[in-house]
Structure formats: C-alpha cells, structure tokens
Length: 113
Image 1 (cartoon, rainbow, N blue to C red):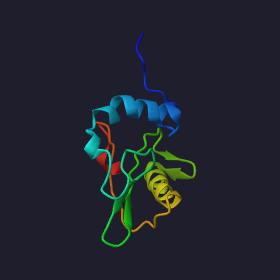
Image 2: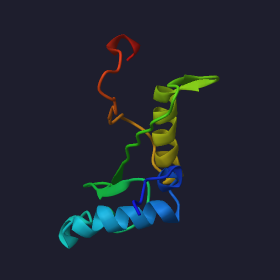
Image 3: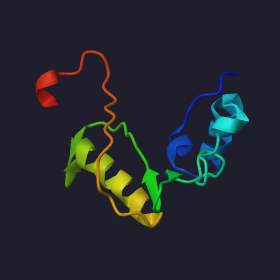
Image 4: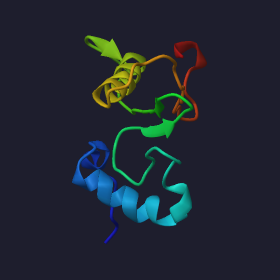
C-alpha cells in the first residue's frame, strides 16, 4: 500500500518530525546538522541559529500551498510572510530581512504573481 503525504505532515507536529527525520535528516552528514556555536537541524525548531562575532542570527523560511491562493482575509503571500515572521519572533529573534522562496506549479499565470 502506498504511503501518501497528508496535511498533518506539514503541521509541525510529530508527523512532520518523523517524515523529516526519515527522508531528509538521515541523509545529512552529522557535521552539517549543526552550526558552529549555534543550532541547525540537530534541534527541531523553525530556524537555524548561527553564531556571529557579536550575538546570533536566526534564519527561517516557510512555504505554503493553498487553494485558492486568494481567500477571505488574505492570500498565500501574506500567509507565507506572516508564518515566517511568527517563527522568528517565537524563537526570540527580531526580523530584519526576508529570505524568499516561491513554490509555483507549472502552468501558473505569471500575471497573478
């Protein structure tokens, strides 16, 4: 029987951890799972903590797939930005820049972007 991705796999809970550990983290060499003086995928959090000369920098990125992309009260762009900013703030970071990733399916209308 085929195992399929379900919405619960993207919710950030136990199912997310299990699938990331099995499919992604198990393939990353141990020395690349951490950042020197900080945290990487060695802890299960929403961002990497990178030690700088003075202090730390937290890097986080999110992506979402929703249909429709425009919905009452928002859109996929606002959802993605809000989700990432929330992840940073919850980790105690102050958002100062944006790291952009766009997940777009083939055939998407460029004028809607």
